[in-house]
Amino acid sequence: MGDNMSYANKQLDEVKVFKDPVHRYVRVNDQVIWDLIATPEMQRLRRIKQLGATNLTFHGAEHSRFNHSLGVYEIVRRIIKKMETKPEWNKNERLVCLCAALLHDLGHGPFSHSFEKVFSLDHEKFTQQIILGNTGVNKVLAKVSDEFPQKVSDIINKTYHDKLVISLISSQIDADRMDYLLRDAFYTGVSYGNFDMERILRVMRPTTKRAVIKSTGMHAIEDYIMSRYQMYWQVYFHPVTRSAEVILTKIFDRVKHLYQSNYQFKEEPILFKNIFNQEIAVEDYLALDETVVYYYFQRWQYEADEILSDLAERFVNRRLFKYKEFDFESHIDKLTELKGLFTQAGIDPDYYLVIDSSKDLPYDVYRPDGAGRIPIYLQMPNKELKELSEHSAIVDSITGKVREDHKLYYPKDLIEVISDKAVKKKIENILSKSYL
Image (cartoon, rainbow, N blue to C red; front, side, top):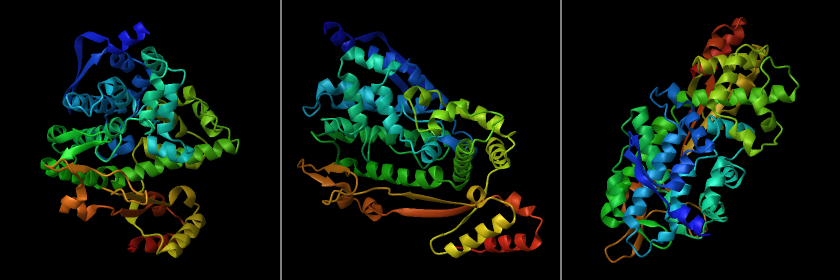
């Protein structure tokens, strides 16, 4: 036990620093954190981009989930440094909190969201399995104590006993969101995601249940919430990125369909087999990263199946689908007609006519019926806590409001070469109209 305690408290001979474009430096003092960074599971995150296919729209968005994980760790390290003198902060939670911050995204797969959608996976469950399974990460954590891996997993699962610790990593204003907004804004080159994080860290106060914000810091929080709102609509939901995501999803759909139909692949998707069969062990999952998936996409361009080869070639060479605004619920008849016309023209509508919907709730208030997310609280001069939207007219104006957007994606190039002139004209006629 003495050994374990000394490992938990062991500091490096000198502080290690990672040069970081967003936080300037990421500092590591603890041997445990240093050892975790060196594990294969953490290093795998270098091979998974933080923003999936967004680099096809914003060419600078090449940063990895490893990049982001170090950033979240660094923000939490700074928050703890500011809170450690306060009586509400339990000093014994420091290491477990830092480990959870560093490891919170371990379970992301390649092109995470498309991948999860097609194969019904959940990256948070995989994060917990990696932390608790037979992995390098688990070995490091278990050296601290037998129950330490479970504690880290519980924070990520939001079931940990210390709610303040959970709120630093997962809430409406947490280190995860703060890092990805600043980092994604930096690498995409947009200005929307920027807000004054230093100010937010200065006005953050611990309470037994959560971190709250000193009321004088309200405007910095408004800036952060608007920044998040704009990043979602200008970057994360950008229609060109969504077009790439649609093609990605359809490639995975097609491969899964062909595999289940006993199609003879030239390039057998060996590393996907257990995923297709819904028998996914942690080691199968960890074997997949974006370099592996790109290899398959390159090879699948030459498959005999025309749909798979076309979709793979489109993604590899960025020949994306065109799109138009389309409220399909009001115009379901037009969608049905288009599907029929596509089929007549020999274009499979299941793969080439796709409705994609985006929606975001910029800020939500926790309601007594249990719905909604835990809100952001302002700490008034008399120490009373008030929910943010009661004080901020800006936040109140977007609270609980879901913004939705529906687009129809289609391959303009394939429509242009339809030989049946009448069918082609009908398709072009429907697509030329507005269906908002």
